[in-house]
Structure formats: structure tokens, C-alpha cells
Amino acid sequence: MNHTDNPTEAFIEAVNSLVALSQAARQHQNGRLNVRRFDPRHLFLPKSHAFDGVFFIHSGLVRGVYQNALGEETSAWFVAEGDFIPPVYDMPDGSPSVKSVAMLEESTIVWLNRDDLNELYELFPETLPLEHRISQLHLARVTEILRSFRIHTNKEFYKWLLECFPQWVYRVKDKHLASFMGISPPALSRIQGSKN
Image 1 (tube, rainbow, N blue to C red):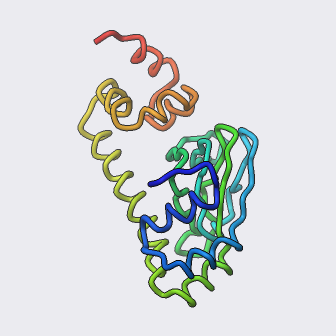
Image 2: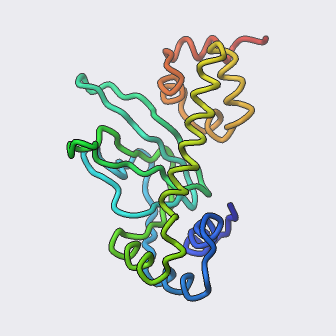
Image 3: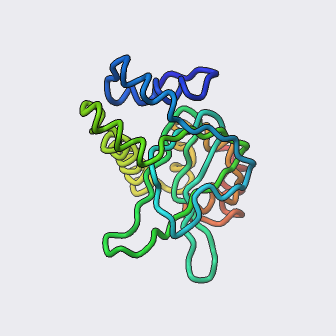
């Protein structure tokens, strides 16, 4: 995806990389986009809330978080600048989502609210596949990660993450990366300290 210093331009270019936008569609979005800078550790999307639009990270890093009944957290995914935050929906039975989204760095988020997004779809039908394509991108990534997780040892999986997602490994705190890998922080530390 293209990345510019202007958050709204970056959002529009990212959307355009998924669905071709006419000049009119670009202009329509431009005046409706929300931009906000969030502090690290801000709970952008608390558990039990569904997304209400399309969200893009212009700068920074966020993580998806699962929390069990004891309040223990597990990192579900990480997303850095230039990418869309995966949709977080309510469960099929109508119960609230069990996932939240938290900032790991000071981050600038650009988003289009649900009402404005629906209006975009109505006025410019060619944009209708947008959310589906965002979901496809993240599903493909999750599938790739899961495959690597299944076929590699913890050490091999860490090396694979280093090769494929260095922006996570070097920027995410060890405790969050360890929970994503399904291992303890001391186990991750041993892997990092290993020379082979």
C-alpha cells in the first residue's frame, strides 16, 4: 500500500489499492474521514464493542487482544502503519465480541464511520467489496501465520516471524510477542538468546 505523510491521503490510497476509486469517490471520502492520534496503551476498541466502520493505521502499531475469564491477555494479531485494522464483529449469536484492540505505540488512526461508509457504498457501488477485501487480506495473513506455527518449532517460528514480520518482532514487547507465539516470556528470551 502507498504511504504518504498526509493521513487522509494515505487512507484513500489504501482504499484505492483494494477497490478502484473514481475522483468523485475520493472527494466524497475526503470530507468525511476522522483522524485521531492515540497514546500508547490506549484501548482503542474495548471488549464487547464491534467496529463501526473501516479503520486504517497511518502511523503506529496496534494489537488485537483476547482476555480469558481470569483477565489474562493473549495477543491475537499485530498491525502496523499502512494497513487496515482487522474487523472485529459481534459473535454470530449476537453476543459481544471477546476481542479488544489496544495501541502499542503512539498511533494515528484514520477511519470512516459506518453511516458514511454505507453512504459511500450507495453512491459508489464499485466500493462495495471494500470490507470483504480487507477481511480477505487479514484471513490470508492469519492462514499463513497459522500454517507456519503448525509446521515449525517455536525457534523456527520465531525466525520465520523475523523474516516475514520484522516490524512486529522488533517493535512489540516480548510479553506480547510471547503470548502471540503461545509461549512464556522466559521461553521467548531463551529463543532470542540462542545463536543457532
